Length: 219
View (cartoon, rainbow, N blue to C red):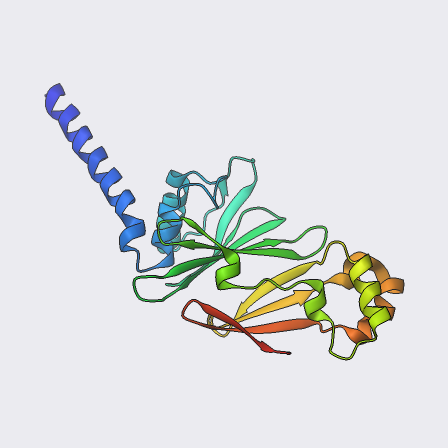
């Protein structure tokens, strides 16, 4: 009997490993990619914890799981191609599956809430191999927010003084649009920002078609 139970445990473990390892290759939904992610993006959430979070969420129980940093994490939103995971009070991770036939891509947006809104966009294939961001999305710099026709002395002033361009990102239109919004006013204060404000766009808007992300407005 002990031998039978031991064999059964071995078979069940082998089946579990087989299912998990094949998720990334067969994933049709973002939840599968969330569960199969090897710890590159969700290094603070063990795989077993992520699987449990999906299981509970699908049964109508949005549990808060304690991550490796002793913070509470939970699934804030889950759809077939999009999900939002609140890792802590200061960090949220957003996933969007960009469908492009057999060459689909996972877009990851790290949102940092404190002390000022800021974000980072990165990309992975469906086996969670990191992709070069520049080939898929040209992340805006502070000069991209400067309006055409701005006096050269103002452009120089902005570029020389803005060392940390605070830019966060928002997915809209069911994942078909990406908005990059600058938050320089929050960091640089009213005095500096007041002289820059007339020459800066508040936001840049991008259109997402497949895995192609194109700046649409303003130009």
